[in-house]
Length: 103
Image (cartoon, rainbow, N blue to C red):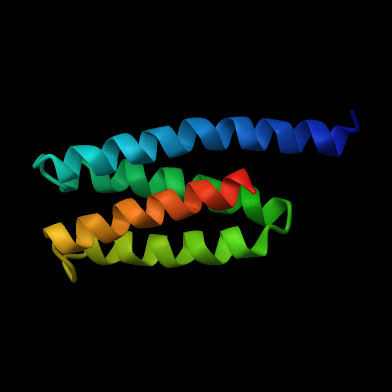
């Protein structure tokens, strides 16, 4: 296995942990916990996936993660509220990001 292949394997392994953390935060919000406690950790997970994806030129993943970050920023800034519709959309976005990582 080449050095690059080893880095990619590490990236995908870390993505699994990050995606799990992201999903836990989203599920907590979906179950009624205060969004503010979880948005930052969700943002960090998505941001970390995006950063690693950028290092490997996984441009579709980077673009999608960037859009996801924008929604999370709007929640942090109070431009959006963590209403059911927004949380449902973020849960679907999390699934899509996981699918992109799995490709």
